[in-house]
Length: 208
Image 1 (cartoon, rainbow, N blue to C red):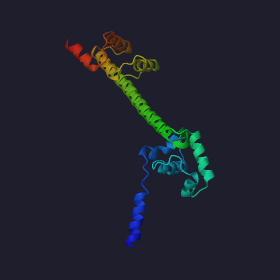
Image 2: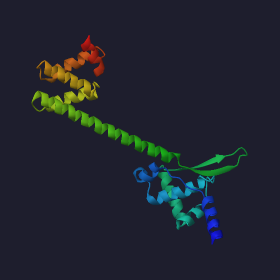
Image 3: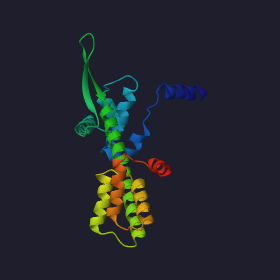
Image 4: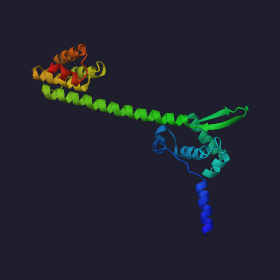
């Protein structure tokens, strides 16, 4: 019994381990990979990681309990979806050998990650824009008109004035009891001419 257990443990350790990055495991469906394709990927990776760049597809099919034609079809889909590539390399002796490459899959994940970051930034900017609208309306004591909202949006999107700068211009307008955007616009243009882009620079100017 102990010998059988020891033999099994030796085979278990000798079989090695296949490591999958959690980004792939958690987001494979978001990059267009099906669960069946993920299983094929894991099977291929288990051999590639052991130095077998082009494993026998019949063995892969046997491991998955399916037909080789089904595995080939799944691999063809992954190539079409730009989740993997099938390449040929030539060694120094001129011998050709095929191998499977999944670097394009990582590029897909990177694009997905970038899209998420962009979406988060867009949501943040929308929230900031709404916050500016709300604060101006509170200080002016009335809702902003569509034209006024467009003016504020242009400050942010086209003139690239920071939200902090716009809010300080609002404070200046309120302190001077001038409740309109034209006055705020003159303040912002004045700062722009003086190359003032941060709240710190405004504080320094006030001290002077």
